Image (cartoon, rainbow, N blue to C red; front, top):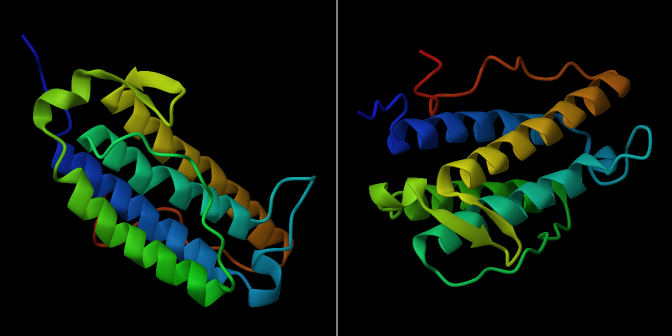
Length: 162
C-alpha cells in the first residue's frame, strides 16, 4: 500500500513559496552589494541566485524529456535583470513542472549528465540547494546591517503555509 503525503501540485506550490521568499532576499540586497559582497570566501548572492536559476527550470525540462540539459549559470547585468530572470523562471517552472507525468516521480534519472537519483530526490535537491543559498543570503544581509525578510512568509504560492 502506498500513502501519498504530498502531491506533485503541493510540492510545486511549496517550492514556489520558497522561491518567492528567495526573490525577496535577492530584492533586499543593495544593487552595489548583490554581485560583490561575500562572507568567509563564499560566493556573492547574485552568483548563488544564478546557480539556482541554472538548476530549477533546466532540471525540470530534462525530467519532462526536454533532452539533456547543460548546467550553466545565467549571468545578470543588474539586480533588475536578475529579478526579471527569476520571474521568467518562476513562470517557466510552473509550465514545465505541470508536464511531469505522475509515474515519473519514482523513476531514476541522470540529470545534467552526471547526477543520478529519483525524480523526487532530484527535485528535493534543487529545493534544498536553494534553501541553503538563501540562508547564505540571510547571513550576508545581516552582515550588511539589513533585516532579511521573515523566513516563514513564503508568499501566496505555498500551500503548506496555511
